[in-house]
Amino acid sequence: MSSRQRRALLATLALSGAIGAGCSDGGKHEPALLVGAAKRDITPSAATAPPDGNVYLGGYGIGPVRLSTGVLAPIHVRAFVVSDGDETVAFAENETQGAFGAYRSGPFGAIDIARTVEEATAGGIPHDHVIVGSAHSHAGPDTTGVWGGLPDSYLAYLRDQTIGAILDAYASRKPSRLSVGAADATVLLHSQFDQPPNDQVDGDLRVLVAEGASAGGGSSATTPSAVLINFAAHATVMGGGNTLVSSDWPGVVSGRIEQTLGVDTAVVMVSDVGRTQPNDGGLPGNTDPERLQAYADLVVERVLAATSSTHPVSGTRISATQLFLRETYSNPFFPLAFIGSVISRSNTAPWLEGPAVGTVVSAARIGELFIASVPGEGYPAIQFALEERVAAQEHFVFGLANDQLGYLIAPQEGYPQIAAAAPDNDNALFNVSATFGDHVMCTLFKAARRIELALPDDPAKCAPYASEDNELPF
Image (cartoon, rainbow, N blue to C red; front, side, top):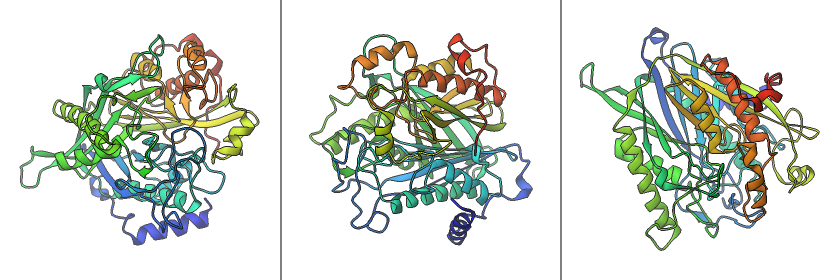
């Protein structure tokens, strides 16, 4: 996005009231964290996706086979912003299939969003402190191009609404206490593979709850104002025969928690969803929408269990970093030339240089919480390694964050089992290389050290990446 385009966009946002409300300087050094959350509608319409608002849905098969025939329920982008008075981190999740860091056709990517947020906040939210994820809804608009793609008008709308939601959240920050909790939701998940090392799932459903002072409740009375939910189920309850735009379970759960807890915004950031599917085969209901509500009910139960038994977040320090990595494309099922001709992702440096695919990973800390973002559908082994090696009060992982590069298969030792299941199983089809998942994991170890979290020495498999230049090239 050019400076001229950014200035025009910022002027529009300022007129809408999204910029400028912020917290006063007088509260800058208050010990409490400042937390804000907000949401904006991203439902396709005739205005944003002409001529009739119908868009291709992403996630099943390959090619433009599912043109939407309507909207089951509105979809949104939700944002969650946390400041310590000096540093600020921003997380946002859109209810689409999965978006890219940069696009071929224009400035619509997560990196463009982050740059504009930094400019709009005069550096209050640095671009490398912004994590934009996708819910990976298989009933959401195809933001990748693999399943038909989207008009530039909708990509621009999605970008602007994401920026607006982050700025709305930034403007609404207020002194808050953060608490963290988890509930066991393993029973709601299953792995697509039943043999080690690909049989385990990440069954923890994690929550981060912001509480502000209650009106007229005294100095110690608090009430929830925002919730962030982190769970590792694919958003595939709405099956391949569905043609209605839907957020699948993430948006339904967000809306239900907002209503039940009376919070302004509940943000679902999907977790390590690689090869992890919802246990939705025996759900009550005769239609996809009925089964979706039934599955969302089960997730909501676990969210409420987690929010009812939280613990205060230790510390108030905020910091974040973003690292760049390059992985040589070596998928034996699809040549790079074919993939490049199909997807909407940028095909120029630094995102693609010869056979090297470039992307980003992020790490953030809120007090003693560790938050990792991965550029695709991370396998649970990445989360397990972070939990084992990174010293933190709790470990969150945000999937399909700041980029969408398919499955991040890990550990590498499990790749032959995945490849042998192709093409009936698509994990090896939508994959950069056999080593990509481990590469992302090793880079996250580096990122954790940059934000001064303690780790032991890296495993031997990280040696090839130890001297890699991970500085951002933009």
